[in-house]
Length: 237
Image 1 (tube, rainbow, N blue to C red):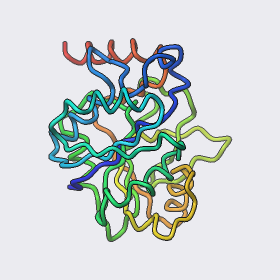
Image 2 (cartoon, rainbow, N blue to C red):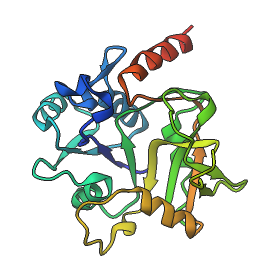
Image 3 (cartoon, rainbow, N blue to C red):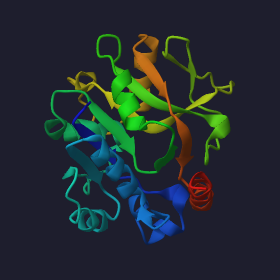
């Protein structure tokens, strides 16, 4: 089980407008709890000890909110001066993330658990001998808030293959993964996306997926908030 997580909280939340005109997306609430706390609570339950949280948009609000947390330990990676995207955010945070594999997570990703914790499942699937990246993936047909054609095909051995631009795929990246820090060794760019690193790992046969148990709730728009709350309520019946 990785003991450290990179939590992406620096984005502008443009698809969540107008809510994010006055509130950063990580603090948008679903069933009375901010999105970032849903994720951090799951990490704490799984035994993750440290979460590195990058901040940019409305950074003061996010920092103020996180000061009240005791677990996991929160370390702020300050991107106020320049938004670095997820890849650049990891490079800036590497001194805090350390030399061992670490979790990555989006704050707009929730899920209704199945029989087992999905964080635990991801950690159990992790095999550094054959993997550089392991992603939690969800079936697009049964997920909430998926308004695109999916991201990956999954081979029988769990390897992920990038969806062709004109294809529809059965699985979407569910906003949680494990990565090796070596993937960023020697990186000189300060602003770049994570997707090309995923795709390069796929080309090398070292990108794998673990299928989410339960239901994925992608809370990326105002409409998705109500849909997610309804799904959580139904799961409690």
